[in-house]
Image (cartoon, rainbow, N blue to C red; front, side, top):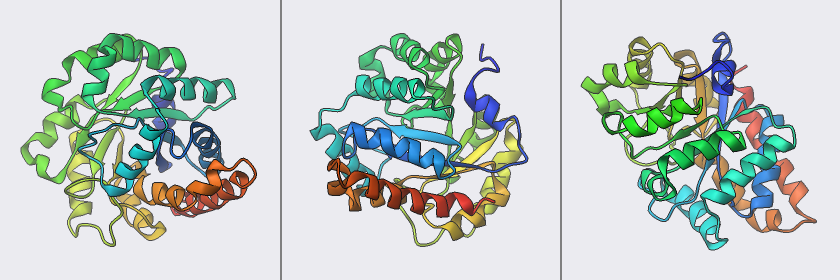
Length: 272
């Protein structure tokens, strides 16, 4: 059974504040850069970090995050590296909630019970598995509960009649997909997004967070009244890509990290 010590539960115990959740890919462009960026994002206002494990067949990810995964895979980054990164962040004093983003095949290859056991051992708080529907997540949820973790469910505008059942089974927080298709920054959001988010909120007792396509402070501010958290991924990964060569250079890396931190601070500040 999930206990109150899970950092996601602690974070959302206060529902009066909106939470900012950035996504970055582990090992893009290097594991050391991800470590430095994770601390910078928390300093910039992140409440929870979503750490993507690179995967060769990322069905839910758009071109920006696919390229990030490819860069990380070329570095040989694996689930084990992501877990070691989590352990290093905890050892350095990182208190923010940490959620890994991966796909079901790597989890099954690693071993479901071993995966959740190691998530807990190294200090993660949950996992997002976008290709694991709630109708098929029983084994994962059972293992997650055994170790005090959350399997974060996703709900999309196309979920329609399933919104109620997904909401009732949600754990930790419910990840609302703002746009149809894969991840990626959008110039505009759906006209009916606020209506969808309110329907989801009414379906569940857990907090909600919205992601997929949100990329500007204006968009963060626009969706905030209808959710408990806002997730930004591709827009941040795009900034990392822009500064990838600097991030790989120990001399130039601090300046690049600072630029990305400033970009993220502008997004996080839109929630205040």
